[in-house]
Image (cartoon, rainbow, N blue to C red):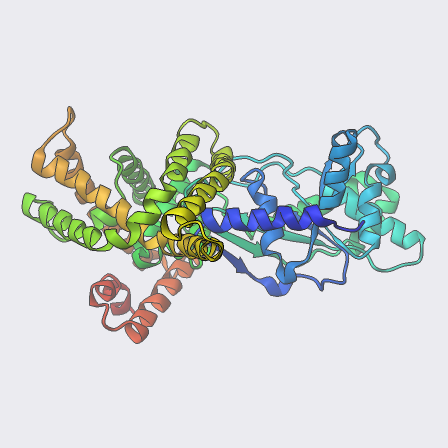
Length: 498
């Protein structure tokens, strides 16, 4: 089934939307991806609505085009059918229980050596772990293998597991991690499928589920997930934004809290303390990095005032360079905030923000272009091209420089909230006491985390992973960033222990 013009248009729009919303999409273990000439069924996690297929299509290695499943009822309208087919979407006939008819269009695509991307969880969700896997992916792969077997061909389509992980999936300028697992061959399940299709499909689904668990972050409950995320930010303060090794570090912290917390009351208390710290930060609209600056001294009127003044001066110096882009894109930011604020389902927020932004962007840029053409270049023929080039540079500069400015803006807001509570003392509730309590709680959490790692790294495999990552990172800091003495100081405790 060939792809058409609409597919390229949709992918181009998706690439622009993802580029403007996320700060980075990190690909891991790309070497596991089968050759582009081989038919393959890509099974991906589904935690962020239409953002998931957009991320897959935009970032899949070697720009290989991907087909997706859709209900065959969506093809009843001839215009919709033409558009969907042109985009490479294949219909699935859910009215039949005959696998050969159910996935007939899928098999046509695979016979052409192409790739089909599916989501075994079925529905997008916000859970601390993977959702319930359905057997459709396994039935499609095994039925196609059966057809190949009957036709005397051996070009079975393996299942490629893919974990799409969003540390903060609805947050503007957050990060996406796409991790590829090893392809799962369906041939070992074929003989059983020829005798008992349902049992074979169940076994293959279980194998796929276990494989995808290794590519993602899974916790038994939200408390364990919150505690692990908070612990990671505290232990690796300078790596929190980069999300390097996010999946293994976070997962091993979760597993450590679960395994050790069952028998160790101190670690169970630490987990609850980290959750309390995270929730209190959220309630006060503060970040751990803002409290961390005061971890070794009291939060006083002088210290909070100086921190606010320092950040304000730096922001004012930078403002002239950033102000034009900020004013021009302000409708987008306001609309994005409202789209996220009034949506109760987290897995829909990013989608709504992006869709609303896509609707506003043409209006904003057309107005900006017309204004620039007439106000700056007098509406001349050559001015048309100058205005077009100016607009392109304007948009590129704003998007590529937004990350640092956005972080500085959030930090400035945090400094103001600290100043407002500690110096001005405003508010109906005792925010100053709560902030001072946060500082003490963070200091105690850091102490307990370090004790847990030092005490259990030789007896618990999950703590051993964290220990090794910390030591390696500390050594890298000393070797490659020796001038960052303030950062190196935070890792002295791990370097002193052999």
